[in-house]
Length: 218
Image 1: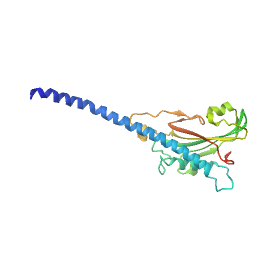
Image 2: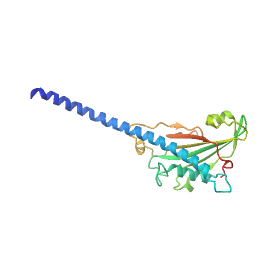
Image 3: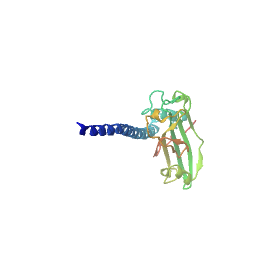
Image 4: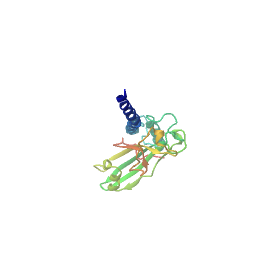
């Protein structure tokens, strides 16, 4: 009996020390699953938004997109993660959603028409009508400026159009990583190349828009 006591004691000590290690490992696995889940959701949102952009005016005589269209597209494409009004203020997940599109049309090899259109839930509006939305004035940029946004925006011939669609999650007031389901990992901020604003998760997709969709209107 005496010879068994040290073994029982050592096993108990080992078990005691293993508990926090196991818990930490479980949190680590949970965080990584959550990270890749959110990464996949923002990628899915981007593809969904691009599809809506191409299809939303199919039955309309006037094909030109408006700022209201971008608010509606942003709202619809966000719903694979957000539910009901969690996308709006007070942002219970600590993040808000943004859709940003950069349209270009090649004038010549070193001159492009450029416009940014967007829809975000950074304001206090509780519906697509109250979202932050807009289309900037069309301006002229050089090919190097366009390439800095996304190299795939560089067109092959004059008159060609391309569009980069970007969806992302951005930090809202009262952000806490635990609201997103993270215990250990702190999601890193990434600057987008259109707005130059920090995002937690972002994904860009370059497409050739259907004729007549752009430039967007206010």
